[in-house]
Image (cartoon, rainbow, N blue to C red; front, side):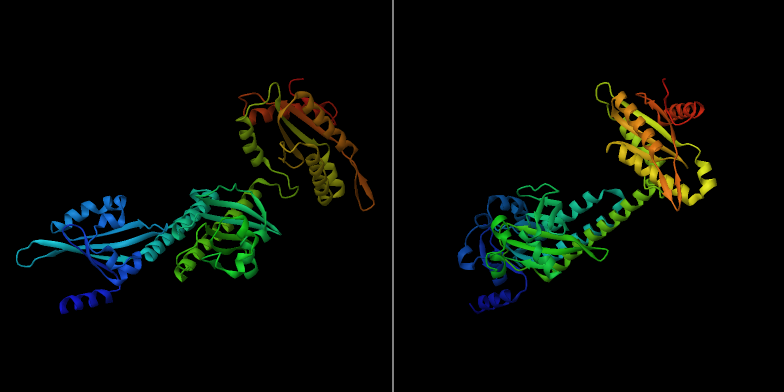
Length: 452
């Protein structure tokens, strides 16, 4: 009895879970760490089989391992289990056969279990964040942020992860991963009706294990509208400014408070999202610069080329056409020579504004040369494109540009073509250019079609 008492005392002093199982696979002893971890007592499970305690599905996973250890094999492995409260745990497990030193017979086995969830989860977060941040060129920002949200939900065992954009009083769902009721990206709420308003006010992480038990959050409008019983939120900052919030929530309260490690690691996820957003904005800015004409703000020839290929892949409605038109300012060299390049730049900017105001939102208006502009009009009736180009000619003809004490007027010549079904941009451009030449040759200030 003294030996039993000493054994029990020693086992209960161990920092890890310890159990002894007999040859019938029934529990004979568990230490206090085991009792606390699984929420059972030795009195409750002593003499009961492992299958009775963990359930048939979980037992099926380990039954073959028990057969091996009862044959004398020592086993060491890692395993993930899911508890009844929904928590996923990563365990380091060791099975040691209780072998008779004289006969060699096995009389049950010892189980030693370490909960390595925090450390395994931390390693997973670090690996994933490194992968997401350092392989950005291979995937879209949406994919990267979705992966980070999925990672956060898995690590925290949360139902929903959201990266929201905050614009004034609007809370806009930009990115979301959820296993619950779906919320469409772009959905907008008043920020004051969300828990994230408290994150913005605090300008720091806000972590609530149980909304119901929290006096400050019980009366929050979000508590009534959304089924969120636990919540953690972080401010997302890009270029030193608050861009939005990152949050993870669950419809059930947490059993344990958010640990410092969990907060630090999810903060790392937030930092990774900030990096993705920052680099994405830089990429968009570079694309904007690559596709834009610096002087007029219109798109350039590179954008026209890519837009043409995009339009070609689509089918025009019924008898509609795709029109490519070149608009060239008449005698523009004389403007530069007479008034200077500053006035010439002013003229180009004014013409760009007028053209932008005439074309449709689906059309492409680009500056492709010094004083030459291109209009790409997809899926448009022939007569409507003729009317639009006539309007361009008339508006520019009536336009007056005043500077200092002078007034300037000018005209444009236009060449247009209906793009053939399999026609390339260079071929269509050549047809429109030939038509433009005819407009110049015939006296300027007119529209000529390639097939006229």
